[in-house]
Length: 410
Ligand SMILES: Cc1cc2nc3c(=O)[nH]c(=O)nc-3n(C[C@H](O)[C@H](O)[C@H](O)COP(=O)(O)OP(=O)(O)OC[C@H]3O[C@@H](n4cnc5c(N)ncnc54)[C@H](O)[C@@H]3O)c2cc1C
Image 1: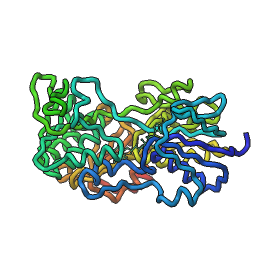
Image 2: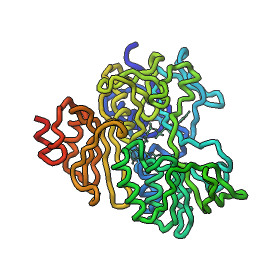
Image 3: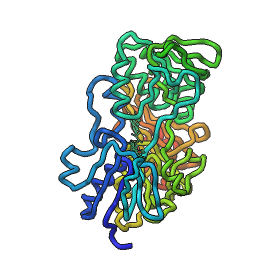
Image 4: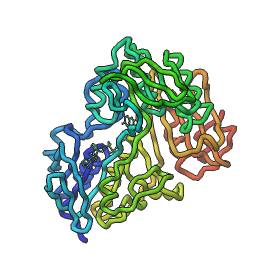
């Protein structure tokens, strides 16, 4: 096929909207149709668990100005749910039967928060957090003095806990693992986060799971596996997200296995197993040359970078996507960046800086290679850290801990 005349993008989140804008930036002059279930124009998610919950702002960061869509001739159709993909006839279909033909398709349907099957999970006052409307609704509930129980101590659970404390709520976080962020950071670094939240007044219930929610119409308590019950005015379920692969699956596209917790199988150029269908962002499980396996990344930078990258491939390029994962978070006065992929429960930890002062960089090292880094309230070495996780540098661990980092790059 020559230049596609019509590119359709399903999913008007960060990956989809970035792809649409980049197509125009690259001079693509065919039709661009961006279809999204949301009623709001494309926005970024990080502020939803930070600035919006804190009440600092009621607006997210919008991916593009409102005028951009008309100015760049991007046809944006909101409140539009695509219910079927027909790869053979190259069209996507809305629930009412409206079809949209495409020459090339980008699937960028993102993730949805997991809602565990348990008693009372549909009661009023049991919140999930994914959309702008979710965040605004939750913000209105996080009033001073309210008892807030958060289920799950991953990144979103921890950020919600921080915002709720800053709003003056009484906050308890329940997590079946021994520490918050345990699998992501390992015990030494995870303990730093446990202690920061405890100092800020969060009550931890670690090593115990949630059995269900109680209440009459509205939640009033959370039952734990150990038989105890926590009183609650508001609860937030933050137990991870699942990629929205229904369209790809029912169309017969290959899905990735358990290592990437699902996702749509794409090659290094982000193309699915259907010709002319690509995927980017949270749903894409792509073959990563550095890791020699598929990876699926649920982070802001990945959605933005893959959205931009895939635009070139949608119009005929065949460039592999090779960026390493990058993630950021803010909790209280603590800001952090995480780069790379590590197994913190198996890799060796090297710490530079001061854990107690919460100004440090953690390195996860395997042999003499850095797999991942976490810088907390230290901002000067970002380029070096990226080079360390992306390159083939052999490292001297003593220099990582206390030496000139840049000199490691040779
Ligand atoms: C509360 C929150 C805070 C976060 N904070 C951070 C952070 O601090 N740092 C960080 O690195 N990452 C953060 N993330 C993760 C990051 O924002 C996501 O990885 C990123 O937004 C994924 O972008 P995406 O375009 O793949 O998916 P999404 O942003 O989820 O967009 C997908 C879009 O597709 C639409 N859609 C799905 N199915 C259909 C369909 N069938 N028809 C039409 N439309 C459909 C959805 O409605 C949605 O709008 C956060 C995520 C959340 C939820």
